[in-house]
Structures are given as C-alpha cells and as structure tokens.
Figure 1 (cartoon, rainbow, N blue to C red):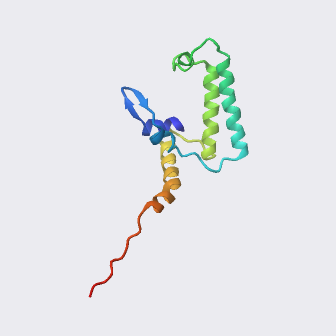
Figure 2 (cartoon, rainbow, N blue to C red; figure 1 turned 180 degrees about the vertical axis):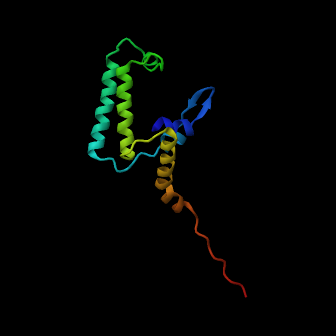
Figure 3 (cartoon, rainbow, N blue to C red; figure 1 turned 120 degrees about the vertical axis):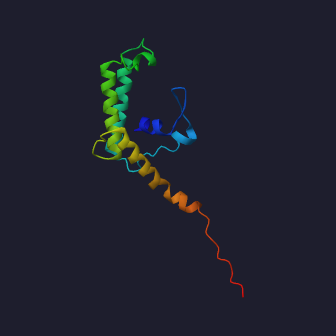
Length: 130
C-alpha cells in the first residue's frame, strides 16, 4: 500500500524516489479503525520478515532485495505482510496498485475534509447601503 502511494506522490531524481516527510510520509492515510486482531497480524507478519532476513546474516539489504535473487522465504513473508496491511483497509484484496491508490486517495480526502472545511474563511456579508 505504501509503495503504491510512494510511486504516485514522490518526485524523482533520475530513477530514484525523492521521499519527503511533508508530502509522502506524513500524508499517508492509515486506517483509523485497525482492530487488535489486525494489529497482531501485522506485528506477526513484520516479525516474520525480520526473522527471514536474519537467516541471511552475511547478506546486505541490497543482496536481499535484489528482484532477481531475493530469497523465496523473504519474498513470501513480504507477501504475507502486504496482505495483512491490505486487510487493515478492507477485507477484500485489491486487484492492482491502481485500485490501492484510488482507495488511498479517497481515504485521504475523507480524512482531510474536516481540515479543509475548518480552514475555509467564512464569507462576510457586506452591509446594505441605502
């Protein structure tokens, strides 16, 4: 979910993302109603990723995350983590990143609507002149 958000919002320098706390990180819409069960599933999936990475103590992150040589157990734990994150947003899986981004933008709009409404200045009526 987050990488789909990053690909839409980040600027680029060559082919690298220009990650910004003000534009990308702080504005990422995380669902407010994550249940204890979902949180526990996320924590377990995140720990599984760390455990999978620990099985390769001599490998660098560049080695581990090379798309051509990524160890299968690490890939599978990341896929499980991705599914756990998706389920925090909705029970049905997202068919594509496009659907994820559309969902995230709708959630962002919903979350920021009260801020936008509060920031709009109220129009004053001009007194009638006779």
